[in-house]
Length: 203
Image (cartoon, rainbow, N blue to C red; front, side, top):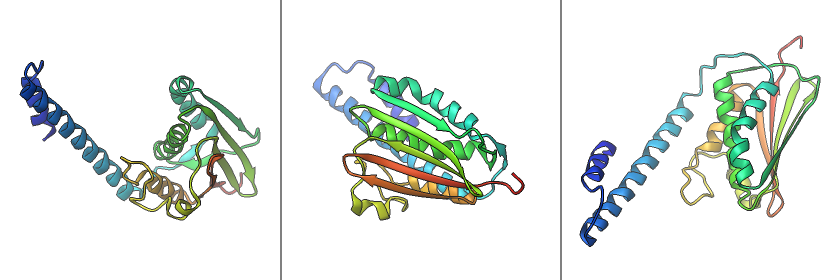
């Protein structure tokens, strides 16, 4: 479908008449809807396939450094400051690095979207007993209390064009690592996501 729409668009490179302009607009709308379906299908497959992890010892500092470097340019454009503070004695944790980066990136992008007027995004990591605790904190618009119990449910979304799988996938990835995730939020004052991951025995 996407390919045929692309071919149709190429047949109307410069719409001259009102009829051609209307046809071009309809093609563009269909292309947008097709892309939404592609994105939804990809997210659904990711949600369904979070089972077999390829675990290896990973330093959280490496993961966070990589993601902060990736996000910093767009964050600066939006007036968002990124701060991160990791405890010096953090042990490595067993992660499927690609999957965990995906889940953490989803939280960071959500935080960025929650601060359309700018703000501060803070990442904190520390050891708590036999777990590493990682917090993602934003100063954004916050989440209404009625939405908090549903936030990790598949297909629940507060975004007009959201499909509600992002946070469901995030929780599933964290749980597949033997960890947990929770959220605290106050409308108008921001949101805090807390991820806890087990520390390997002997560390």
